Image 1: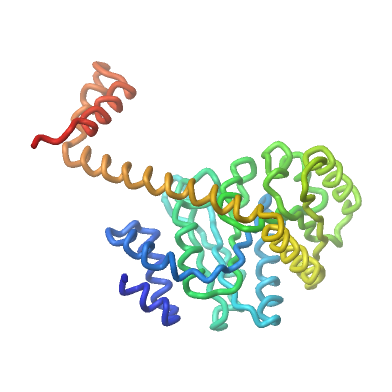
Image 2: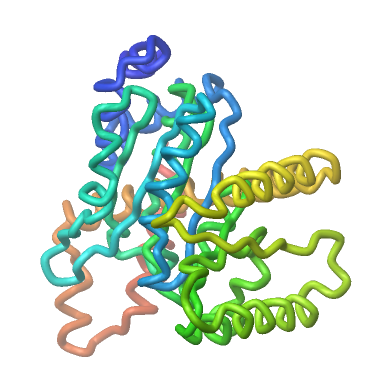
Length: 315
């Protein structure tokens, strides 16, 4: 067993933080760590919170943490912020918004950048959630960056996906275009004290009639005013109802199997890429000069790399 896995088993918070950093940086022993913690997972409820920027996701998550703590549940949060394509850095604003919970031993908050991922989640987000699950949190909240039509990765990770909208923003059409209507397990109309709520509710129901008319599960619509702690009980009840549906219908097992299959292939893809990149870097990218001079093309160069790797090693 990996040393950090043993410490996570003993509920050392510092070990969890170190393990997440190790996974994010793809250290050499990352796979050993992930293999060690996989059987340690406790079956936390993984909840995705997504939606357009400005919908109030962070405020909602902040109040939901307090609500769940009052129920005696431990909570971990993965807050994903966009990474700058220029500096590679990320303004991890959610750590500021959720500062009230930093001294609570029953809450663990980790911010991370997307690191170039178009799907709104960095590749290490799933690994981070698994580490949090192994630690033993009851609920894990995954708040995504809200990048609109690229916001579909969350469906490959969370048990329940809540899409947060607010009135007067024109979000519904964008959400419908993005395909998020298909992945939402729950709609949250936040800032429900603003004008335009009835119109927004009617738009959501009309879209659901179109998309979910023959579906065995119709996502409920919950109204919240996070700044006043209103609607949180209804939100939690809807999430629990969806969790029960996943178990009773067998949909949860189907999703889990599909996600596991996808995860294995993602790990394979990443490890092969890392190996190829390391080998080509050591050889000085021998094909680069020909590519620059126009003597070859990117597809031929890639084909040659694959052919070389597929050649049997000399005995």
